[in-house]
Amino acid sequence: MVTTVKLQAPFEYSWIVALVTLLIGLLTIGLIIYVVKKILDLRQKPVAEKPRFRKIKLTPENLQKMKQDYIYRVGVLLNDYNAGKLEKRDGYQKLSAIIRSFVHEVTGINVETFTVKEVKAIGIRKLDILMEEYYVPEFAEDEKAENKDFAASCRVAMGVIKSWS
Image 1 (cartoon, rainbow, N blue to C red):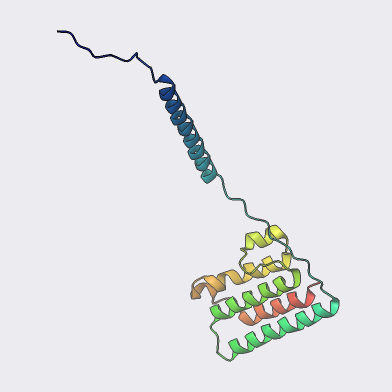
Image 2 (tube, helix red, strand yellow):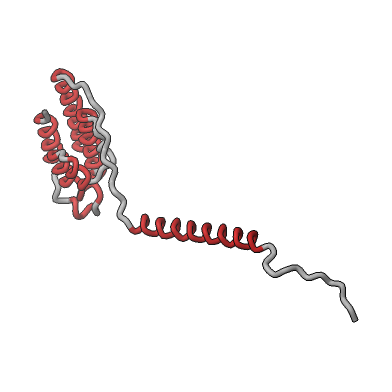
């Protein structure tokens, strides 16, 4: 029996196979490089972004007005605490917010969300000391904050504001 089937030569379409294989290989290598880069990026510790400083035109008169305003705010806070309108923890939280707001307004550095470590890195010496003093009564259990004197803390805060230059 005679067959009339005409067979094609092997690898007649080899250039297409080679091109597809090359493309798949390049895509695989690219994917591997991408995955390795992502894994290495995840292993690295994130670098804290340096705070952006804004230039503030602060005259001695403006600074004096700011100091008086913030000393008044601390005084009102102390009066509210003495009148029993505030718990100690709430008082410390508000005192911390007042001090941070003062520093932000005077320096232009938005320290409202900074940690003590970040404040120390910037070098705002008076603020980091106050933050360390307020940390326990602000966040700890009430028993641990019992020995802290809120009135004394307010006086220290007023002293820092008065001495700010």
